[in-house]
Image (cartoon, rainbow, N blue to C red; front, side, top):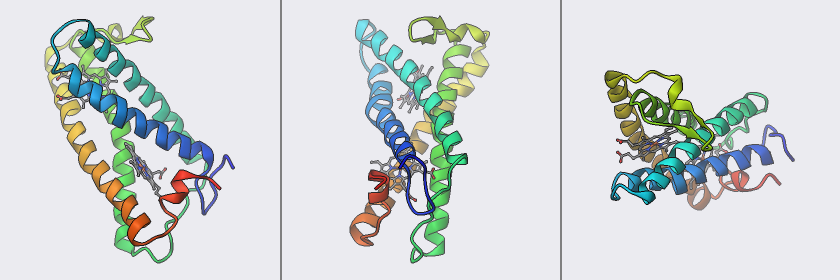
Length: 181
Ligand code: HEM
Ligand code: HEM
């Protein structure tokens, strides 16, 4: 089942959820943290290139995901979930969407305004699209830095919610994000 229904996520929404989650948690965050802490050299250059390129891939996937969400029904939470928890879940999901756009955009703008290259698939330097500006670079660097902390906080809340549904409430909420059947 590719499309969402009123009760379940379809396989496309599920694949996009886990692909973006894995790229962020397993590639972007570790690469971002390590690349700033290793000696300048080949390893650091590779990590920067991986971080910038996969970050742009996350941005493209986020656009596809938002489009897919707008074209599909969104499954409702089980009826016995209290209203305040539904509102927290909605707010958390809204913030997660905002972050999967803000992180790549701020990373790109910091890099480009800083006058550094953004070598898309090692073919085009997207950084050249924007003229260097030190004050702008500083603003976007700070936004990129602080949105990583917002990400840790909101993802922790999000994962805690998912685990509570699975292990405490024993409902379908986590299972239906794992399989469309
Ligand atoms: C989902 C996307 C992204 C995530 C989750 C992410 C996350 C991070 C993290 C955790 C750091 C380390 C911050 C620190 O310890 O100070 C970082 C640094 C950095 N990121 Fe990203 N990033 C993303 C996308 C991008 C993109 C698309 C670019 C550029 C095209 C980029 C460029 C950079 C740069 C240049 C740094 C070093 C910042 C500095 O020198 O202070 N990031 N990122
Ligand atoms: C181990 C980590 C994760 C788990 C266990 C998890 C689990 C879930 C579950 C069960 C849902 C469905 C909620 C429902 O049916 O109402 C969901 C939705 C969602 N997740 Fe995650 N998630 C994880 C990581 C992430 C990450 C890293 C992000 C993005 C940075 C993310 C973004 C979202 C968004 C935006 C939704 C709402 C989908 C929509 O309304 O279109 N998740 N997640």
